Length: 257
Image 1 (tube, one colour):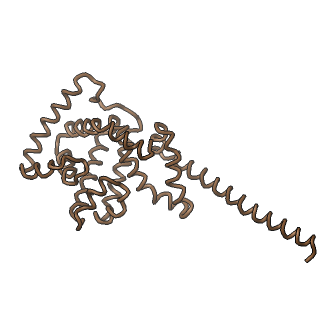
Image 2 (cartoon, helix red, strand yellow; image 1 turned 90 degrees about the vertical axis):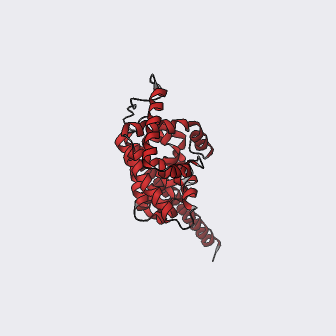
Image 3 (tube, one colour; image 1 turned 60 degrees about the horizontal axis):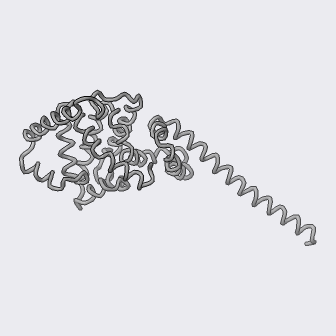
């Protein structure tokens, strides 16, 4: 092969390689545009990212991989894990905007899921692991059985959707006598728990004093579901408010701020 042919072949090869990588870059750019547009079209994601724009790269990374592997079907499948991330990191931002009905449905779904997970877990350890690390959701959902995890995450999504109008709950830390409202609700709840559970059950549930204890979560969710809706609403919101600094610090440490 003469020199001209060799040079021509080399040039063609360079063009082909350059074209391949150029197409790859174009395809990657198109994928990012498609996924970003989809994220921004989801009301809950748009709400969270408006308040936390620095979290946008994490949202994109979360859905970009599934999109490349499975298209929009992969993106839809990744929504459950993203809702776990929202539930853990961003619920605290909207505590005083959630709708009461959506909150009650959320607590009921959480109760059904955690109770089943605790009951069906042969090791008696996965439930606590899941409460500490939501990335365990796939195994937890399998052990809980049925579609309890999906129902729980759908209720969580509906809870976030209910906050989109950003209408403040009538009782919140900025109103007069807020502490009095909370204390009255606590007294009412104490009497309610005493009537529903034995002293042994209550003692067992509160021994750990931890939000990462499944028995405590199941007991408190059940008590809230059975309580007067106004009492349950104020208590859940005020309890979440008391953990605000802890949740925000954990969120920042995990790169979700």
